[in-house]
Figure 1 (cartoon, helix red, strand yellow):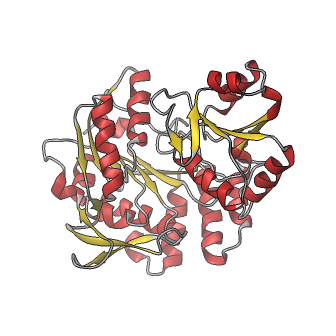
Figure 2 (cartoon, one colour; figure 1 turned 120 degrees about the vertical axis):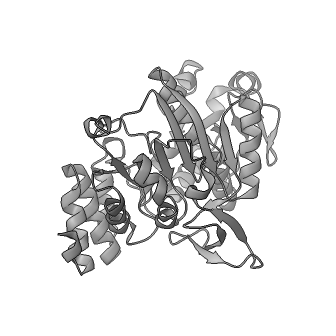
Length: 377
């Protein structure tokens, strides 16, 4: 049947029929229609099916509603939580001339430092400095929002806003969906493709620990030099063992690549010469991974290079048949071309698609082999 398919339409239909549940098929169809038309309503259809985001679909410029609301309070603005997301929010507030008085963070290592010119303090310190009725708190954390809200309310804070209601946000279970189709082994060897700050690796290790399992080794890939150095510091600080951190992107072969259309929805990696500007080293998984290691889970979120990285992992995928969590939203055709390719390597793969944000990004394809079939190997 597969060999008889000639058109992309035939191939898309074949992938659609290979999906294992209605949720996957609904996301697939809406991504197809969005890719073909560019109409935002198809993304809204996907988001509306996620309970926590059903009434909170993001649209361009939604942050400005938040900025105006903060102005209307006429109180000192305090951000709660200081990380990557808070820094982006601070940039937006600064651009709109919305002044922030303090940043609160529970991490004692951050307290006493500055976020630009804004002091980072503990909640108890700000309560000692200011009258609570003069403050409005903006929760910038993507997770643990209700815990933070309860903490603020116990401290007597009356005016609390949640940035998640106005900005792009995503769920923490991305890549490790606990919907019943993803089972972890007693010992996992994990590939973190596009590790950024190793937060995904941290979440996975914690998840395994909660289940009484272990992550015996991690291969982590990060092409950005500054991000790589941040990861190295995190490994040293946390005392993590058995993490092979590689300052390179992933591709079908060892080469040089660069990021095209950086900062846009169409950002993607392309091959480049070593002497070109803004290029980075890229490697293939098949050449980097120790042949003695049986890879059990591969996660890829690598700016549109997912298909090329999978092509560079053909030997590992055919041999180990690992669980896969692959982003399929960076390029228009990823949603069907990636599963179509994977079926050519491992016909036994079962496919599930899930979406993890309130906007167009963070659609993940899971490929898994039935454990009964795996145990019969």
